[in-house]
Image (cartoon, rainbow, N blue to C red; front, side, top):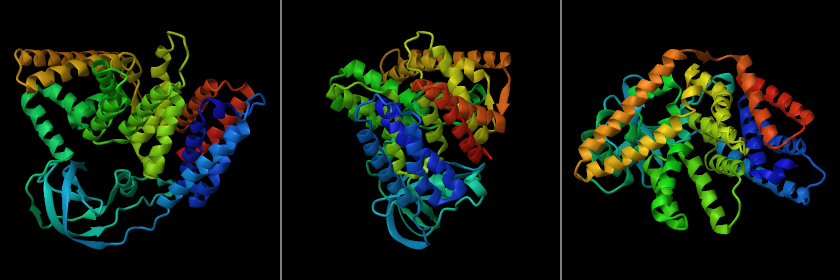
Length: 470
């Protein structure tokens, strides 16, 4: 049982993911039965006679998988919310974002009743604003398509902790009160006022998790939109800088900085996954234990699913898990291995990206060979310059102009490669199956499975992919 020896939580994660994948097609009973069946099948495909105490580890891991499945079953089987009335409730605007082409929505966090979302025809409310309101609560709408392929506002908002819709016909604004949401809003305003245009947009994405449509559209065209989403890339930069300045032995301070940054950026699923991974590594450092990247990312993925099973249907969670699992599987000592990571991530994330965004630009394979390094340096320089500018230190204006030049230079580089490689891949069932098969091959190679076992797992995975993609 090679998975038990090298990454036991990976078996738990895969069993939960596969069971949730067939849940849409076959119903909740398939999820309940699928978890132990998938887990047992995956584990026995990696069975080896020479591993000591493997049956005990198998039993413990199966119990963990079953306990996780019970929690997920409890959440997803909850009856639909019935309309009720909220009266004289105090809440804080936690986020304001576009909804459709012309409208906005605001997420309202209340003290005792949970989170709600409301439609705004104009951006009349700002993040951090405190309000008192009375409103009926209406349920979120589920997807009615077979297999859940249609957008489901129920799953989208449930993954963000929202219970239902409210209508703010009448509300009363309350005096300001310190909150992380108010800090986010004021910092966003400062970046808009004092930073050059491009630098301000990039820093809003990196510091606050805000993405401007124009910037987002450009990076989609280049295949580098993941650089704008707060994920392991940004979290790793923050923790690296914190460790450099404060020392790697100060685990408590590093943990505080880590989670403060994650919640400041809105605690997106990809950022939470990265935070849990890094926190696991910090704890392992304290205990003097080696860190297994694949096991750490699997552990983080399982925790997030247990916390909110609706993360499974969140595009950010899926792409983050696919990309990091692929990267973690390239743990070889060959110094040229990094050249394979970008094409591998392109292949394994292709089905999800092409299905959701209709196309995947091929130029991203080339740009992502050096884009992470480029933006690592750019974000660190821009962040340092922004702190100097906000403190009104001498020469800070000139430094910000230099930062602006770095981001403008990236646009020239990216557009140059886009002209050389203007091709895109659109959705294809055959390519999606091949991509799923390639991911399984990469994982089998990581666990050093034989060709026969690899063939069995690829065949079974292709069948599951057929259920998913059709």
